[in-house]
Amino acid sequence: MWWMYLVSFLLLPFVIYFMKVGNISVTVWLIVCLSGLVHFFYTVSLSYAYDNGDLSLVYPLARSAPLFVVIGSVFFLKEIPSFMGLIGIILTVIGAYVIGLESLTINQFIRPLVMLRKRPYQLALLTAVITAAYSVVDRIGVSLIDPFFFIVLLLFVETIFYTPFVLWKKRKFILQEWYENKKVILIAGLVRFLSYLLILYTMIQTQLNYIVSVRQMSIVFAVVSGSFILNEKHLRVRLIGSFCILSGIILIGYKG
Image 1 (cartoon, rainbow, N blue to C red):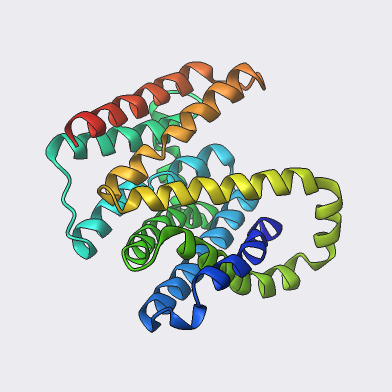
Image 2: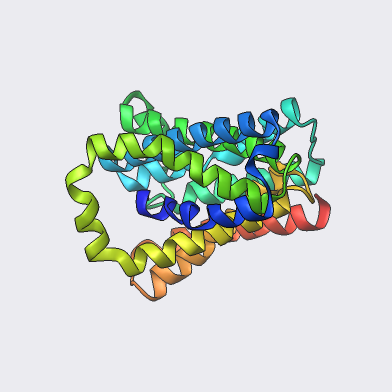
């Protein structure tokens, strides 16, 4: 993740050239710094949750972010979804929750919630709240500055926050990680940059709560590739979850 963030340092000279950094308002810098800090907490929180918890339990909780985004966007952005749009959002959350389960039994369905007494799953739920927080902050940011400039500055600030943590916790792995996975790092870094840039541009065109919900579509692609390419298990449950997500997205697009 840290190596992926370094793409910002490659792009920063272009931002400086096309837009004098000194001319960026104090408000924009505050938003960028706040967003970078929140993104940093997101990365650390999710990493610890995955490190110490069961993936099938962490994933559903971490993916409940759209519900918190609805609350945040109503209170801070005054964006109120339509009734059918809200139903679509709920369906995408249910779908994302179901996909992480091993079966559709009652015990499996409530297990992530029951496990909230343990720290990894508390962190997973916290990750969902943090996702909502940075989504709201980033929505405000792109209303003040072009999304391309915003994401480059964001990655730059995020790297500054993240570097001391990485040097403290993972210093001995940094060069090893680069030598073993540099191709993956470069591809993933570029794709991550472009994908979030597209999201930021979309943020200035429609309601935030719809965007975060429609982002769950990536889970459907992951399910298809994981099941048919990697031969992963629990295909029936994941297809049901995918159907819920698709239904929710259709409702958002048609009635949202």
